[in-house]
Length: 284
Ligand SMILES: [Zn+2]
Image (cartoon, rainbow, N blue to C red; front, side):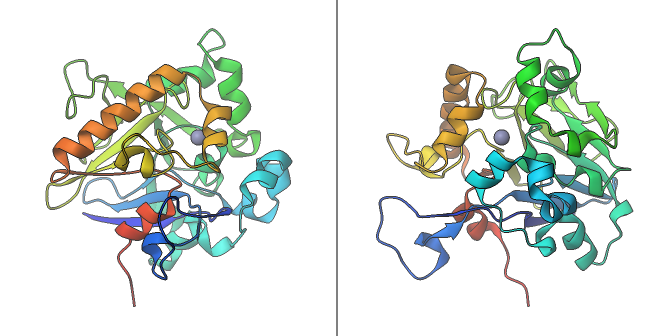
């Protein structure tokens, strides 16, 4: 099994906080990213975790993503950053992506769905219910953020199955995507969206990666005491979140996970470019 860390959509530049700028990526201004994983599995073909911005978003962003979002997020609009183009550059066909696992159904995570219309799309059952059941909590809020351009092709949205007895490092309510044999779980991290979940995947060496989605947006929220949020990213969080208290609980659990299990689990979030820079293996 091989895991690639991909940036599927550069957004506006953001400065690091609290430290003097340095010339390397560790501490200088960088474009916010849409951090996705492309997993080459033995059992399930290619599995894409989150999809960033898709080719249609990059060609007609105002129509596909909405003018207000585009004005704030300032996407760079480089087609080569789409998951589709990156999959092809790695020597695969788009059809080789058989499964997509999403942390949640916000536009900067779902943009690539139309580029892989044949893939099964797995989400936590709470997120599935929020967009499919008019009686579900936050239904309107959730559907408003799941862009019509990203679901017009009727993606094969599939709720993962909650395993009541399964905990993951003490996190309850873990769900397993249907029909996936590899070691991959949806770990509830609610609060940012109704059924927001991290995606935990175990690599060939037995170590876990946890893609925490938008449960937090800046590494200072996990690494600094007290938690340090970013003034450019925090308004996005405030505007989207469905449950402030639940989000704080999820963040504190992640702080504990990082503190107690750093040798077994690497945690990262969707948009923090410094976290991506630590994880990307330079090529060429
Ligand atoms: Zn989001």
